[in-house]
Image (cartoon, rainbow, N blue to C red):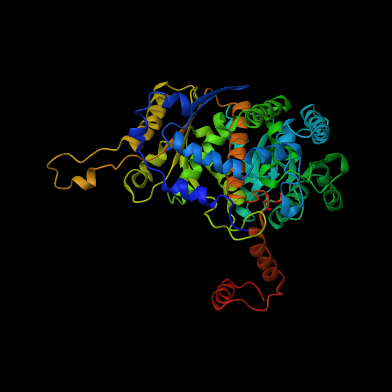
Length: 511
Ligand code: F6P
């Protein structure tokens, strides 16, 4: 089936391209493209005015949204419809935040109550002395907890959490060296409870407890999973299995029992605040008309660059050390969701899908990669994330310099600078400018704000997917490599290409 919006995408490509400076000739621009949402953890200012959004662009993207039934798809998402059509599932992460179909919300609340019970039992010492938790999971079962723990535990934690994802034993060994087996619990976080890396690390962690003198190592294990039967079969006592719903995707699962380490480190009330912050964004996304919706606006700007300006990447820089894992988190969210080359019906896409998401932390990145952003031949839209209140007690000068630099980068990307007259090497010192950026400025970095930021990006990713007609909720692209690794491990491979065969021989592994 031809892309029903193809002609409109061509219209988007063919629109006049006023510069950002020209667009700012409209005195209403800042009000139109910058909105401040009052959220449970404090306000977040979403400033998209330094992008090439314009009434013309919005008219065409609005027509594409109508053609692709974006508003209808948004309803379906929150109603628990089987929007993940290739896997025959709903995508009910918002129900975990109490925004969704009533049945799923009730179910999620019951599962959260179970998790709260276990968290409180551990805090009350009913499972013995627990000072540390080694959280073992990978991908969506690790990146969310790692982000939240890193961002929110600067001032200490009830239980110290170490997130271990990689199969490389160095990762688990590092965590083991920082913990005492006598006072450590292990969380095995896996939606499927079959992932090789996680199950291998879990077995080694169990050995470590045993060798460390723990009489009942299984008694120190908690399972966070949508496959509770498999966890029980593996040996986890049913009372310490915290299930979550199959309709919550792995990279959307930190709101479910996968968030157990967040609740254990910060207390369940803080975890509830995290959910509440996300729920406020759910309601904004669901209830605000597309034209004034901050989430839709962000996705529309993304689409200008990916669909009409040939941009293959988007960069995200956190100007706050607490948010340094945001780029990693968004990489999985956006690339695993929208990195597809077929539409939801399995037909080849006629348009680009997701850009590559990459980034880092400011100001470090300014001294490493910003050269290319300012003067390279690539056009790379940039997101800046900043927080008004610092996370430290040092001289306020630190934060002043941090924020000044953040805002200076956006200003410089947009304004550019012509070469000085008579400068024979003028080209080398000129900045083209007219380079887009968006800025998210949070009042505070707290559980509710972080929840809001993550939910904002979940829905931003969803809008982009709906606009180009793909299913963002499957990830079949990860399977082939896993299957080949299994063949190699089991020695059942029939022989691979000459390069792979030689690598296996050189490393001394395989058949
Ligand atoms: O390999 C990709 C993936 O399936 C992700 O989508 C998922 O978050 C991760 O692996 C971990 O899967 P699980 O939670 O089932 O262990």
